[in-house]
Length: 183
Image (cartoon, rainbow, N blue to C red; front, side, top):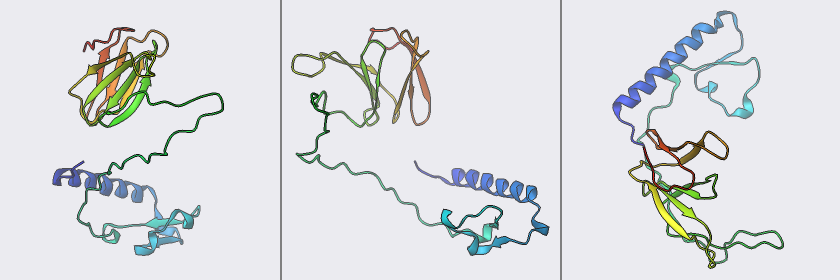
């Protein structure tokens, strides 16, 4: 997420306004234990009930240059595999997905997979004799860093499926077993 000047100003304005309202609500004129200045910045270990801290804009640390710390994908170690209880086994169902973020099972058993990098939602249906999906299809495209999936209403016959983007929530009509999205 890029922070531009307008966003910084908006956030700063909200913080300053909230601080002003809080200080107005807490009339600290007769309180003896008010910690101020840099001493007011502590960890949770030093927090105690009844202790007040007054932090002014002048007490805040100076802004620093922002950095983008993106995650780096590392290769899966060859011996890394989920452990299953006695009598069960774990097999690879699907691979080569583009940023899978969430898997949600539809009432009919289809697996909806939100692929954030690709901006799509893929649907995997059934299990073949090889342990792989019988069918794979794209349910929705053009999404933006999508991550959440929800069927509504809850239960066996939802009418809608919702996908959460970073900037919106999109609703599609859901027909149990029909793999065509209808907006």
